[in-house]
Amino acid sequence: MPVLLLRLASPMQSWGTTSRFYQRDTGKEPSKSGVLGLIAAALGISRENWDDLEPLTRLSMGVRHDRSGLLKNDYQTAGCNRTDTVIRADGTASKDGVVSNRQYLADAVFLVGLEGAGRGALENIHTALMDPVWPLSLGRKSYVPSEPIWIQAGVQEGSLRDVLGRWPWVSSARGREKVPEVLLASFESADGSGTMRMDQLLSSFSERRFGARFVRSEWIPFPKEATDVPK
Picture 1 (cartoon, one colour):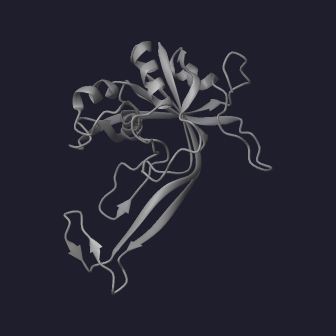
Picture 2: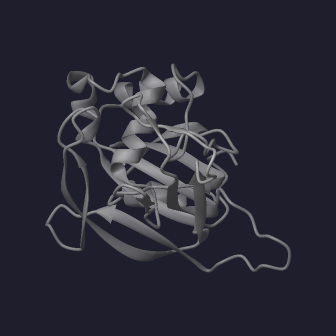
């Protein structure tokens, strides 16, 4: 079965699934809803378009932590000076200052695999990532990728586990850091075992309805040098 590979690398990325009001969280790896939102932007699927988005939700996702990154907190304020005026979402003016805490992952690199559609559909997504309809970001609009999301020859044949296990490392060692012997990877669980995550899309992004999916994490051997795939 074909698998589409994506490289998600950036100085800052955020994949929140439980954010409320002024507290914005991030998961330790890309959320499925976030990855599908990125793909929807590349394909030009609007927030209200469920017909074109729904087939993407059937894809099974795997994530390999090539560099897990560091969890950081961004403390933000707006309009907290006594002379400031903040414009609310409804367009009205307010003298009340806004304080928010926004978590993000610093210096993280993930290899994401998507499995479950025909090769033609995955190649269409791959082409769109090379020339996206709308700008691509990693969880928040200001968190732009530092490297291309698309990967040369990024549509591979094999199971999701096998493809993520053999693809060359998409990160690099820093300074005196040692190359790891194993990498953390997570895969969707078909039997309902593992950890429940509420990031399975049930509607268009404008309606914002999410359901549960189950993910099982494991350590996989660091990939050996491969000669049949590009670096």
